[in-house]
Image 1 (cartoon, helix red, strand yellow):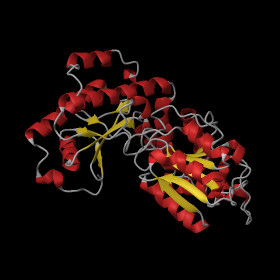
Image 2 (cartoon, helix red, strand yellow):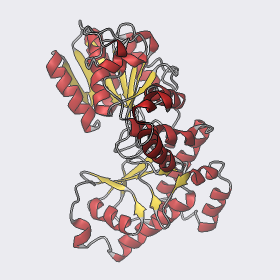
Image 3 (cartoon, helix red, strand yellow):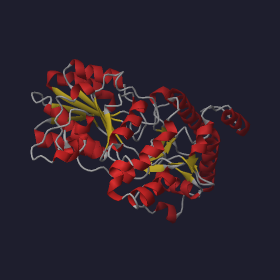
Image 4 (cartoon, one colour):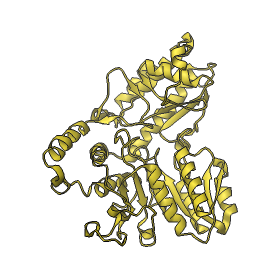
Length: 416
């Protein structure tokens, strides 16, 4: 186990030297709470509440339908997509915000398979986020493809074995349970060399670490707006289509907002030539407004510097767990190497659920994923090194006193 090398004073010095510390002031953070669940729902950025109030009371309340033009509502999906594009290494005209991650995955997966009609194999991962697996399975069944879900360490081999039958690979860039990062560039290149297309789910990447879709020559990507992008509960999702594919793309949910001339109201469908073709119906405008406002947090943020901090937060958490919790039944479920790990650390414990609930009762908010994962997300803009020290201190007290072993903590709630 790691030697007892960290002290509270050393942690305080890490915060004093943190070039990202000023970003914490951009969020509304409740007193007495350590928030380590930004990988599930991001914290509220300052300014979002005021922006929504204006949208409701002035733009909707007074401007009414005129606000589609007067308040510039109509191009919000493209405008917000352009703001996300900077964070994921895409062109501003290659990303649009709309619908949910599940719906967007359905669109791009069907569209990709229509581009590879002569092939029959889809590769994905065992343990991928459930919605990805469900969509992959339904689309494969509907369109007559074979879905092969393999262990993470076997993905490259499965791609090679599929050979010229490979139609598409669909993976989550950062695994939602373990935080393991896939080699986006290497896997994309391997699949494309065989003639396949690759779809990346960036739900646990966007806003947490640098992503370079165009640098990796990515084909398609999807992701959500409510985790590290801090867009609020149920915020709309985003999707990316490489510009080289737009002319050939044929997404299945043709709707009037994806039409080349929506307000011509023609009966025949003509897809828009640009990323707009990936839209379907009218945008959830209030959700878009909240997400667009939230993204201002990142306007001047160096994602490489942010990535360095979230690696350090994770490294510190692991070191303190091993320093303070030795012999208490915890095992590391995330890569130890920070370069191979996203902005989270997961532990396993046989009593994971009540332990997480006991932490939450103390104001340390992480979450639980079945069967035994305690998951802690480190959103570098608002998590401090002191937060890590205090979280592990609380966890140690809960374990030493048996505080977790109470009926109220063992009753499963609807959301874990």
